Length: 189
Ligand SMILES: Nc1ncnc2c1ncn2[C@@H]1O[C@H](COP(=O)(O)OP(=O)(O)O)[C@@H](O)[C@H]1O
Image (cartoon, rainbow, N blue to C red):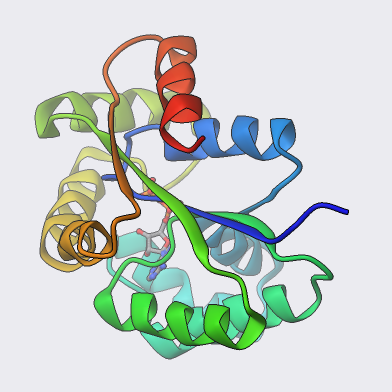
């Protein structure tokens, strides 16, 4: 029987977290939880939550912490073993603390926090490129710049938060998908 395993992908928007997280999840039998995907799905289905968060996503701002923590609580509650990769969560210190409480209750410690490092200018051009094919309406240069700003202000401090706990693993995010993936595999071993 496999044991609990929690990996948190950290990194700026456009760093390639999603692609790498999906691959690692499938190869290590983990569930990838992308809060961006979950929220976009609510927007598409026009649920009550979707209607509430649509303008926030469109602006590249952050959805309120209690909403995210409740979403994650629900996801984890239905799991037998807690084997997950978080992608896009936590994004604030309050979310990180909320997650700590949940994981403590479930007896599932954080295994590793890979941080995908990519310089800012490279990121904007990647997001704008992705916007041409992704169909994601928040992949414009303007939202991309705002998301980057929001990352630096709110999410960047989590690097120190997890470094202090000894779980942070810095990964160079420049290179081919495969090269970066191999570095990630090494980092989370
Ligand atoms: N943990 C979170 N806290 C607050 N808002 C979030 C969170 N995750 C996703 N969102 C919202 O969804 C949008 C898209 O998230 P995501 O798919 O992770 O995009 P990115 O490409 O910026 O990493 C964010 O800009 C934000 O509005």
